[in-house]
Image (cartoon, rainbow, N blue to C red):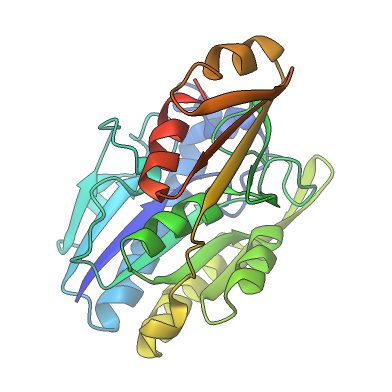
Length: 266
């Protein structure tokens, strides 16, 4: 069984401040250790459930956070960014049997993680068909576009609640919850154990039930903090400036939506 895994850091247990997420900051050392441990646990759970090949995208910041030497040998690690429109799921295709997301976080505008954002902090929020979009939703639709089910997600409680609303068959483990600028976290070892067990359980079920429904048409709105960005990105082919801070892009193809999103956050 071939599994695709993508890992972020703002949904890792203990991670609370932006300094803990930046590779250049000394405070990022412990979060990177825990990110690696949670990813390793997910890989072990997947292998236990029958995965023979795992492709892992280091999908935070520089894409150079995970400690490669600690990964199981069945894993191919994708470091850095190719520039492909699938973003945090680059290299995903229809040869994979499932997607697993580790360390994902609440959407921009949510109050369930002090580090809540969508794609980057210059964006106030993104909506897809009038639904506020997290990085989970954006990339779950990528998987759906390729007809690959999302099997399991770990991160903060707010994100896990969103996952359950979209498809209750997707396995989740909440490793923390946000309160204002604070987080309440599971012990790192307990988070690792629950993720390992949760992935194994998710893969033992009916994978087809984890398929995310893909809308027939898409309308994406991106609202920027800086009105200048809205003006600039309104010149992308097919986009229009909806108001001084918002750009809208409509298309029937989700690939085209992701191609717009590749350029729009910059």
